[in-house]
Amino acid sequence: MEPDELSQILRSVITGVGGHLPANVVTNDDLAKIVDTSDEWIVERTGIRKRYKAADDEPVSDLAVAAAEKALTAAGRTAADIDLIIVATTTADLTFPATAAIVQRKLGAPVGVAFDVQAVCSGFVYALSVADGFVARGRSKCALVIGAETMTRLMDWTDRGTCVLFGDGAGAVVLEPMEGQGTTADRGLLGFALRADGTKQDLLYVDGGVSTNGRIGHLRMQGNQVFRHAVVNISEAVRAAAEDAGVEVVSVDWFIPHQANQRILEGVARRLGIDESKVISTVAEHANTSAASIPLALAQGISDGRVKPGQLLLLEAMGGGLTWGACVLRL
Ligand code: UT7
Image (cartoon, rainbow, N blue to C red; front, side):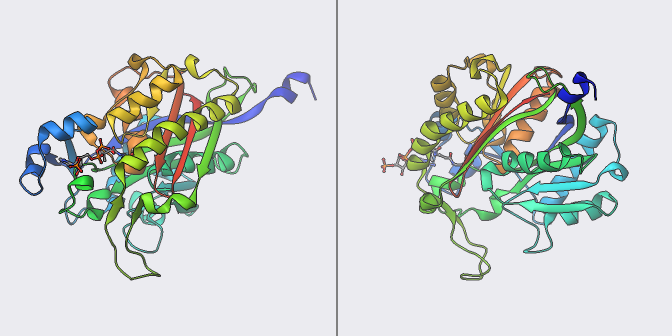
């Protein structure tokens, strides 16, 4: 074997990205009609101006399929090419089968691997890492990784502390294997750090479940505690992911965080020494779409021309569990 061949490794490369939002827009003023809140409070404390809400007859798989179709088109692939589908969601169509299997059927993709990942708002970062385990080992030639959510279905519309924060949507990426040199110049997923701390469950959870009370339940959150945890702990995971990738945090071209709160985005960027101009923020337009927020922000950054192939991207998220994590990749 030649020395050159020895240093070649398989990388999971994002070859297409797509985002989809439902048609129905809910403004802060709309919410001020049902709970004691105001556009001023929501904008000042969160940066959110509006969110999208799926129609009652629009399941999360429909949002996922629409995003996936755009990602496939961008990658120059069709459903026939897909051999792996991972959907990160906390708002599945049904208790089972997995939403990924429903997406497979609706896309008309052939028999392959399909399953869901449940890590709430961190789900997309977790799912990318799981997919990397297939793609970078040559076990998938064309994978779809989707973050899709109908978080509005979990809202208690009498709780102003939560119902103003979330929205619906989906984002998808196509991942394909490509030979790299094992350096940070390679395209593909370069480094990860995933974390969970189950002792923090009470800070953010849904008070319903199949094997407890049999209800769907509502999202419950101690917002200010989650806020504190987010700003402090995400930075550690980001540094660990950068170290795993072999890059400096400050060298990334774009920081694409989970979109929960503009103040969290800015706080984390500040702690990491990342310039504000490198942060992709969609929180004003989309609100918190949980596992969908990162791929939606990535799709936005690409479609408006800011994010380009070859650039170094830093993704991070935190959500119920608590779970959190980060990923460094070259597009
Ligand atoms: O995606 C995963 C995780 N989720 C997050 O990352 C969310 C993290 N947390 C946050 O984004 C913020 O903590 C919130 C936006 C949820 C809340 O902002 P805050 O600055 O931490 O406010 P707070 O919870 O400390 O509440 C301050 C006040 C309270 O009133 P009192 O007790 O001071 O009289 C709340 O009742 O704001 C009140 N409040 C509201 N007022 C108007 C809470 N929600 C609202 C509202 N409208 N929608």
